[in-house]
Amino acid sequence: MGDTIFGKIVRREIPADIVYEDDDVLAFRDLNPQAPVHVLFVPKQVIATLNDASAADADLLGKLLLAAASYAKREGVDKEGYRTVINCNEQGGQTVFHLHVHLLAGRRMTWPPG
Image: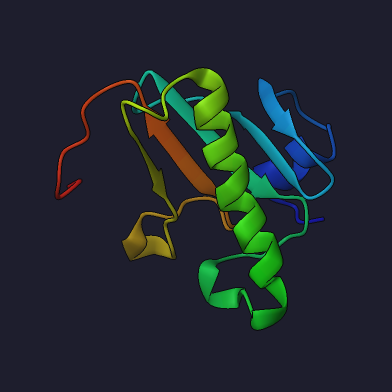
């Protein structure tokens, strides 16, 4: 697994507030939340950016989104609405180079996000 902070969380080398886990995906609360609910869904398999994903990763990418939707429903924010975000590379806002999906909820989201 990667040497990023997310790889270390997946390997349990550093603590995190883990809220979801299955064979392929781990999710934990963001340390710098941008909404009342801000959870990061990371694949246990390291993929640095969305650009590095291939057709062979399609199932895993789907699992990330389905895990986020399942968590939103479990937390009761699915009806009011939520946002999922994947940042890619520096200008896209990516700061940890281990692909991840942000789930943000609990407040009205604006567009464009800024």
